[in-house]
Length: 486
Image 1 (tube, helix red, strand yellow):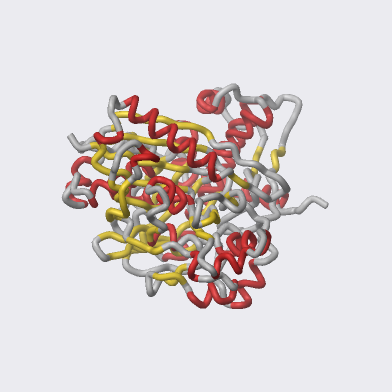
Image 2: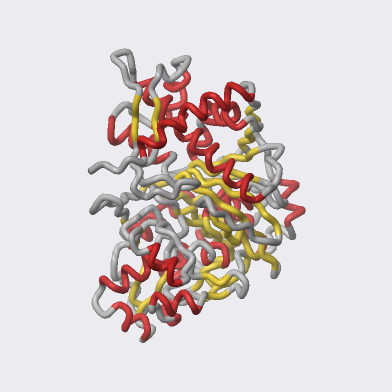
């Protein structure tokens, strides 16, 4: 039986999943990563730690499936996307920590780049790459001499897995750097010129489903085709079979990312949503429109790690449901600023409405409700800017999508049925699907549709007046989050 290994390298953790030809999960493993926050607004990861933990979860997932590396038919990668890495071509040594996509250190540089003609934002790779090259010794010169390599996390893992033989990315990840010319499916030479970044540092751009190369035996234990790559949100769209124009999903991970399939054409937004390439497959590229709730699952982790009101993430669901409402408590989860539609990197998280009767259950419920209200803001932006009718069902995935309270409240607040498939790890499933198509585990998309497994549907319970009243009441709190502390 053919087996596909999918690596899902997220912002706060890395997963490995082994799927068989029926897309049944045979083994899985997860390890948390350890982001550092050296200054307010800065978020970094150790590239070597990413690599070592990736190897470890692959080993553990294979062991759980009673398999060895040589038993694999192929390997797929999905990843946090605009996170920016630069390393030495000769030895693969990182020249600086990975600057995570959430990092806003270059926010003041973005207006200058926009004025110069680089369509970018503080969460994209463009200004982060420029910052690294400016702050490491002779960065721009070494890049021009092809002594350095730039990549997002997919490129870094591909480089390490193939023993430095392949320096490449796919169209979906390239489209999230704001260094990509979507019309030409190539790097934007004008943007690179403005940033003074040499094309010599850039990876090649390939299809999301093709054989990139083979894993090095010394690194992985066997020669396995690396056959699929996509950004985590695009992979989740593919893993949830959101293949038709108008399909929408929200992935609840560290952040909450809402994506809409806009078909053959891009949709442009003036309210903080942005067009992406969902995937390139069989010579065709699908377009999407994406909006961002920067902090979602990370807010729940803060309840556990920062406040200590949760012993584990698993008790969040039952605790929120243990009270009939939030008791007047409200929360705006803006720990790294506010994304779509506000695009305010200076906003900060706020919890308000506390009274002597407030309990940890009320605070937990308020944080989950805040995540839902932010999701509605993003969804309304995608629908309004695209002009596409609301979907019949909103599909969800990601670790936090296992939370029944969160999904029921989401259905109530947006007034659309919410569908959770059997596997909430849709990003990994999408990466496996893309890799499996390339190595002929599956013959085409129609075969994938037959084996995809739907799950539970959460139906809306509130009236339109009720959901609008609660939502607009919460929106008044957003102004508080946007008042920058002096």
